[in-house]
Image 1: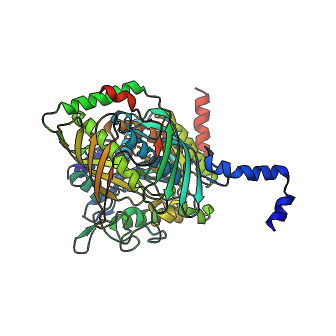
Image 2: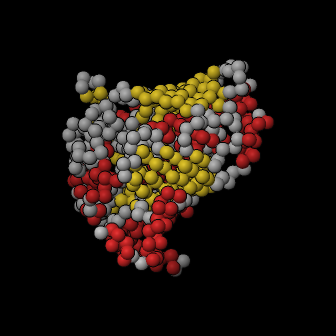
Image 3: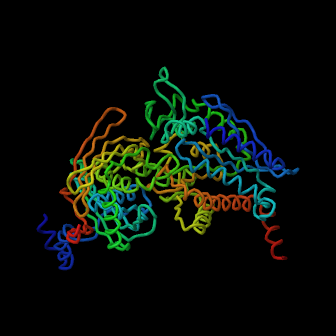
Length: 328
Length: 277
């Protein structure tokens, strides 16, 4: 239970010490009856805001992912009063962060099996556990790149959104889809990706998602590419890490029922999957000295994307910031 | 019909046609009519890693383990009835420090009938080779001096720590697992060594270092974790001896044995200079 309660404790503290900016909201319950909360970072104002959504910890063993969500929150909260770019985007955008989507699985990876991936739902008289939440969404569910065998690590569940975690986040985003401009989901590690070969039969123009990781590239929408490329540049500037931009368009076919494909399906304009360090030498069990650099570089990337979205949808406020700095 | 066509061909074209078989068989770099892959394509990365598994195994040097940096060029040539041959150029990184340590040219032939890909690989290496030999030798000396066998669990542990005393054992596990991962790799299934679950040293009466491991491999794209028993016998300057036995979820078991006599080639074997060990 250690890590689960530490996470909740952290969320509580963050909310308490930044109550003018941060509120905690209930999403639903996990299979093992743990409450799922997201944190909403919102600058109080009369203005209706648009939403940037980011979630971490969909796959239990990818520990660098929840670590990053926490780090990113800390970055915003430490700097929102002084950083002009953060101030600018918070005028127009609320940032919703779900630090751990798969709470049951995450806790299980701390207490019992470090390399656990799935949720902890029980099937067949509790002889078989866990659904791969990233195969459980309602986008071409159960077609390709999944297993219908519950003991498999890519088990897609008994039906689309069969899992309470999936249902909770999907229902939430669905309700707000007209306000969600940008959707980010954070994974690891950089070589943990899907089969490219089967995608070649499908028209890439149907897909628009982008995947930031150290791998592949294909055709996709110009603005998403532009934002992602800027993000990759910003990321590299931190510690020299090379991130390549590639389309999740490919991922659908190997990876039906994934979170990002569903987000695309319901029409969210910008969506990205991040695959953080490393490239496989240590994989899921990243050495501790790489945690901070990974968080720093990824923060640069996410900030860049957020600024890009802000400038694209709210050009006036962006101009205001630029003009302001010219007169200093 | 053919003779008539040949008679009409220009001398230049005829010359090209005559030269074509030479280019096909002996050419060092990909013959024509191959498919060029995106350097960031999964298949290219996968093939490059297979080549590196082979290299890490054949070198059998815990201080000189290499990981994939970036693929610079990749082409694949289908060989009807045989398989697919990849031609690759890629950079490499030191496994532990991620520093760039050179570039490799490699071919990887995935055969339809035999399970193990055929690899040819040649690399530049920018690390000081004298230094890596010395590092290997200090590992070796430390391990030879053990009166009590080294044992350990979960290396790295859940938080990514590797106990300094277990570093050499972990590095040998990577080298030994490389053999296993090379054997198991197919065009579509790739592997990484995720964790050493268990390590136990056997104290030997001869010059060798002998370890028993339980390693966990991460299989992509299935995401499965495969448990394998691994036995690694190391004498610096000699080919690594590896035996393995893997169990998967559906009770399929696979085993194999390697002793450095497998076919394939690399320029990176430092043999003669090890005599002073």
